[in-house]
Length: 104
Length: 104
DNA sequence: ACCTCATATCAAAAATATTTGATACGTTAT
DNA sequence: ATAACGTATCAAATATTTTTGATATGAGGT
Image 1 (cartoon, rainbow over the protein chains, first blue to last red):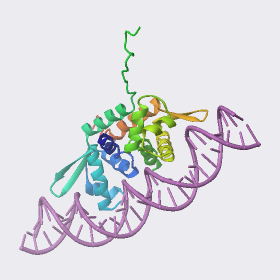
Image 2: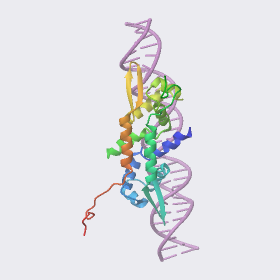
Image 3: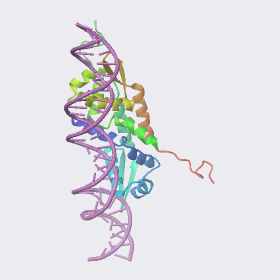
Image 4: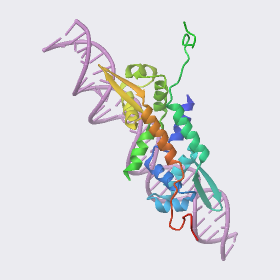
């Protein structure tokens, strides 16, 4: 199923050290890529690569302003990730034949 | 900081297609490795590898019973992952000097 | 138009993760 | 004690991800 791939993409945001560091910075509010880069022992194109993964996860959103790109944590995307995580770890109640309430 | 590494480890459980498939199976309840393997187009040692990552994330717990290893989703570990995700995506209110309530 | 700046993209190199097959370990049965 | 079974671990092969350096793109300023 392609669904697994899609779900995995969401959590890619959180399973890497450097991306967690970026999220930590974004918890302080929207930041321009140029600001991120000067905090982050990382080359410009490596940052761009990680930002792409973060945006593709839905957890971060980007906004252009002239030549700058600003990034921030997406409330909606984060909520989705949280809900998904809960779903993926919650018992999957399968209603089997004969498991009904009024079973004899 | 080593904290990022540790947090990343938790989400490693969810950022891989095959591990999501395993979690899906475990949502149906505790399963023996031998049961997992027959559902999962994957060799025995590959399964063992993924199970190790899942257990190290805290999201899955294992139990020995004779020669069998049984795995199930850990409620505690899942709750921790959920809480952590929320924390990592929640604005980090930094109280700066001069930002106080009674500022002139 | 031309130049500079900020960021994205590309291809190759480097690093890391995953799979495979062989073997080791612990448990149970004979 | 030996054999068979289920799982873990190891090292090597393979695949995927990440970094790097070069270049492209697009916006603004001159």
